[in-house]
Image 1 (cartoon, rainbow, N blue to C red):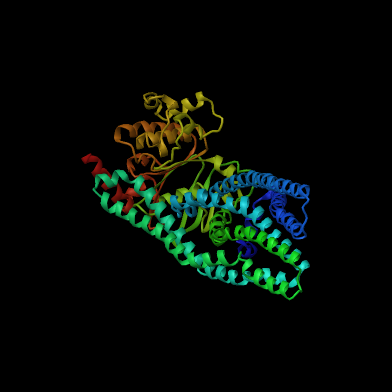
Image 2: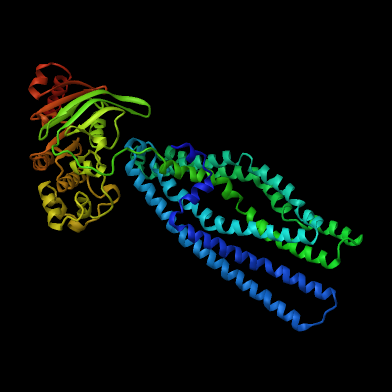
Length: 581
């Protein structure tokens, strides 16, 4: 991240997000200034009325006209405030939509590890609540704070033109009020960060509690899980309570003292009138104008909480928008052939290196399998090949070119990736399969389903292909979700297919169906398989045995058995389990 961006103030950053809508905000500020001007103008009119009364004028028409003028100013205040608010909100909700869209697009360009390192609750909190919180700054603070700051300045300047001593008297309470305000602000960042942490923890616990409710019930963990939720809810509530308790008195004093202009204006003005250095008419005018300062000052101070939280709120959104991306060119063509080569690949996750110098050759059209103990790094290799993460060092080559030199969309078109936990969206079965190829016809979708062996069970669903699969595909079994994922990959028709334990959720009866569909999916293509059932990859052109983030051995099935190494041990264990099944 650039130093300039780091040192940029929160308000400067958020104004920088307004893009082409800056004109609307300028118009909103102008309208707000006019509106606040209309709200203050009656004080000048009242001052004129009081002066006429003090002069003994009994011109009823004069007073009636002035009352109508005040009513007109009041209507003008309402009209211009409404126009300002409407203008700022139309611009703001458009800007918030654009920021949220940019954040979502940014997540797709970030390495997968950086995304999954954040809990879903924390990301949801940032993408929804934090971005929504920007609304106050853009829609209210920008026009209203600016206008309410400008008008008191204009009034004070006018009071100074009448009598500079009374101008100073009008300012007398502000330093003391500001002192209380500054005292209130001290430590507020620490308190707010605590509320953010506590709220995130509560969000995570709530998501986890709801998502794991079945496990909680089955294993009788209701009380312990609920106690944790109660603890996090208590901490979230008291993070706000403690913050409010620490700031309530200085905030109250600031709100009482700063607008209390009469405390200094009345005694000082009275003394000046008494000694003859200030006329009674001027004194009354200054009193009325000083009262006009009170409302704008209170409005300014009402935004104190928003200023205190601004840095943290914007910081979380900025952390996403300014996070490092996977660097890929925007233009270019992929190589004509689809051979893959991994050259001395090192990869670290959360500062711990988990791949240590991986070398692989995957010729175009070959069938390559990755096997090894759980946690050995097989899935990480698959995700690196699929360009979901970037290598720490080394190169992954496609057709002799570093994949980091190939545009992301171009490379993505070459890869179909089916993992053991493929995600289904809460859409119809048809639309989930159609994600493999935008604009695919219903006939193409159904052909892919038939080829993947899932057409039959889809037709037994309540609404067939138009059945909603539920959140994360929850209305379907694990094996059904897997077969729909394979159908989606079939529809994509990519020349390189990666299967990360694609039969993990299937029983032996359905495994044969999936194997037949995989054979159709991978016909004439480069196939990379991570398998936990070694019997499914005995026909592989090359099997790589991965252990502790390194290639421990490689060869065909027969060659590896003849090496009497880890693969033979795994094979014997697999056959023993199969014999007892």
